[in-house]
Image 1: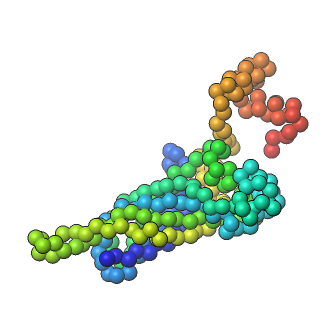
Image 2: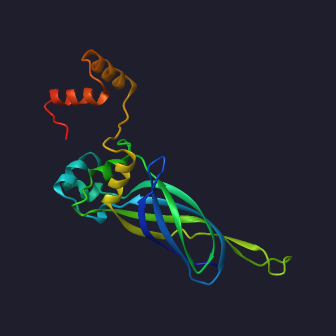
Image 3: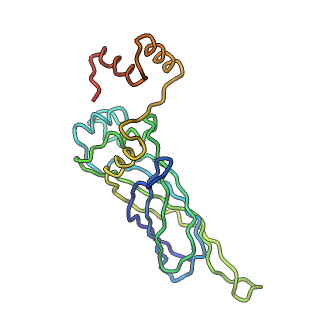
Length: 222
């Protein structure tokens, strides 16, 4: 039987990617001396909001998710961010592999709301938990191969690692993929109404239409 241990070394934006991706570098250690032929690795990444403090400005940004601070004792719960997979080549002892983390800037997604609310100059990190699973292919014995062959094992359900990702990493990813912009999902009827509003006032784009509506409501875009 193998014994695998996981630790997350770094999380950083993937350079030159078409879609917004982070790359997690993960060290995998095998402590029994067995040779791993290959590892089909799966991972769920969760956000653990209780593992950090929040400024007053962050509290305002998280109101939609967790309610006012006095309710956080019951509402500030761990929630899933994303799932990812990787095929790890064979190794003995330990190796370092990369896990792609496909991200979205859609504010309808809970993780995006949470990440957008965080400040780089407050606690400064995003508390992440990586829950690993998958299939391990090892050298093994059989009755016909004279000691050759392979074995198949499952990664134990309790393999996990924590990592505090700097908020600046998320900000860098957003700037890299959405420079000076972002996007929100609208209902078709809302988008049609915005388009009519824009055309009636001779505005050049949806952004200008929203800005004018905000100004009319006494709000200032920042």
